[in-house]
Structure formats: structure tokens, C-alpha cells
Length: 146
Image 1: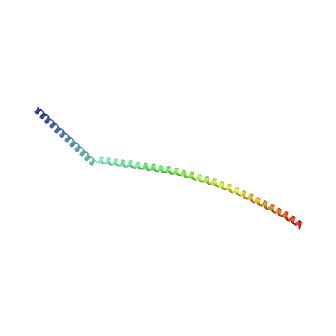
Image 2 (image 1 turned 30 degrees about the vertical axis):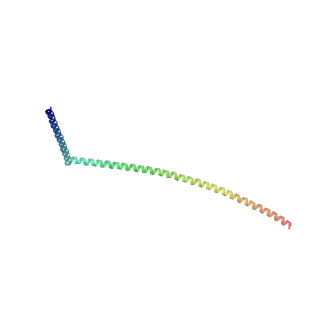
Image 3 (image 1 turned 180 degrees about the horizontal axis):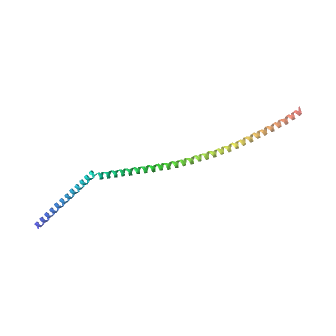
């Protein structure tokens, strides 16, 4: 039994060593492939050209997005300016309407005041004329007596 355990242990240790060696070999192969890939990429003019083209396309896309965003902002500003212009025009027209209405009211008030003054002048002239007539009557009466 002891011998069987030792054989199993030896087989297990052997399998573990083989597995460790296989993992190490796989890692070395992957590292070699990666370094080869990087070296090929670094040395290949075609790949360099493609990388430059990709980089230029990315820059172009970013620039395009920035220009589109700028145009959207400008359109928003134009819209806002049009809205403000419209609002200011409405305020201007409202102010003109108020000024016109005020002028009408002032004109009406002046006309009423003028009519009132003319009426007062007429009444005073009539009162003066009546007073003068009475003065003349009294003078005539006095002249008759004298």
C-alpha cells in the first residue's frame, strides 16, 4: 500500500511538472508571438501607414463633431437672438400703443379743458355785458334825475 501511494505521488508530481513545463512553454510562446507581432508592426511601413490613416480619421471625426457642435450652438444663439428680437419688437409696439393712448387721453383732456375755459370766458363776457348794461341803465336813470 505504501508503495502504491508513493507511485501515485510520483505520478502526480510528474504530471504537475509536465503541466508546469507546458504552461511555461505556452507563456514563452505567447510572449514570443507578442514580441514578434510588435516588431512586425513597428517595422512594417504598411501598418505604419494604416495607423497614420486611422489616427487621421479619428482626428477628422473629432474635428467634424466639434464643427457640428459649434454649428448647433450658433443655431441656438441665432434662435435665441430671434426670440429676443421678437420680444423686444413686441415691447416696442406695446410702448407705442401706450404712448398713442396716452396722447389721445391728453388731447381729449386738453380739449375738455379748452371747452371749459371757453365756457368760463363766455360766461364772464356775458356777466360783464350784463353788468355793463346795468351800469348803463343806472347811469341813464341817474342822468334822468340830474
